[in-house]
Image (tube, rainbow over all chains, first blue to last red; front, top):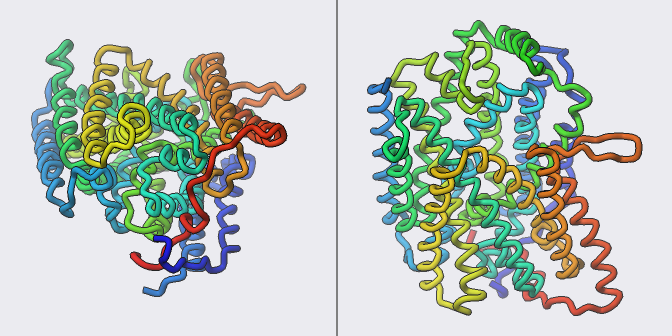
Length: 71
Length: 509
């Protein structure tokens, strides 16, 4: 293992983007509201569902920014 | 009354996974007497298999029963499962690949292996191993509770040995194919489990939402009924509940991948890249979990009156679907108990074999001996969980599980911070861990076995997750004592790892 070339990390600063999911979900005052509701679903619920999707997108973005292989 | 059509579908699906479980020995042929092959399937799983494996591993049968049960019982505060499973993946996106690399480069099978070499400390490694084993036991027991709930819902409500027989048979089959195939068995079964779960959740959501007159009606009805309960609840989170909600989500997120079975799934991957990719696609399971959580409100809106909240989802399914679908749904939950139970027993067995047996009983034993010990230990762990569930009240397992989450969180500093820095003194980490364990236990008991403790901060009272408060104390002590121990020059252990061991190699991807 020791003699193998090491993969350098590209754009390590992109990892800072991963703060976003924490900031968006760990402060309930931000989203514990009934309005704006969508089709009778309170904001509290649809917002937290939306956060899952956005988190996946943020991670995909970080993955692409930091990947080093082109295989 | 026994629902025979549902039972037929249930048994057919169960038979299918049994065949798969036994066939797993021949899947991706490898020497199953090698601990890396038995315990981690030779670290060879690609993106798709790993996705099914980790998803099948952390979204357990008990999750599917308990999360909606909580929503059914308390309303909005129970929804913290969503932010919890949102933040856990970015967290593991950061440290998971790094742990995968060091484990691959140094041949680690568990976190305790890493702690042993990183800090040169047998006692710290033992602390991590024992915490892992202790935390895993009630979790396996609760999988059995999930299994019992659906088997009872199918109509097998007999008492005594005959009543327990279906659970015993299911578990015996599981124990045998895990013994033989190791991690390959649950990995293969996870394909069936999660396919069934996705089909059930998507199908049930569409049918139920239509039947119950749309989401607007479900939320409105749930709000009305919750407000009229003897102990009123709400579908909206009150400001007084913010601190508990946020700390439960954050603390549970930090704890999830400290569990031995979670990291076993990660180590089964064939590269750090596979781990990263999985963190990107695993949130699909969180979306599904969100819909399962809403089954709690659907059960309220459908007028289900289960004997206990844990019966909410089975009651909802029984009242709303034809028998064949009941069979599919219940099989999904039952198989959803087997996959995590298998991985948990493998993970606990690895901890025993490597950090206790190899360290204290039979030093430097060969890989073949470790595998033999681990296989045997996996049987013991499962038998123990079975006895626990058969002879003790279910409530014990639930209380124990609550403590387990707070306990496993206390290994976070030694493991995760250890991946990035060797600044902490091994003895400081040990004392921090010990104090965290005691404090978490004391607070949970003082709070009447609820996960939330009302912390008095001056004039303010903040209800916070006990595990996180204990982690705060643990970390604070580790910081202060490290400075102290370094100041008075108490000998620290030798680090056997080098900076390069943490790096991702270019070859072999």
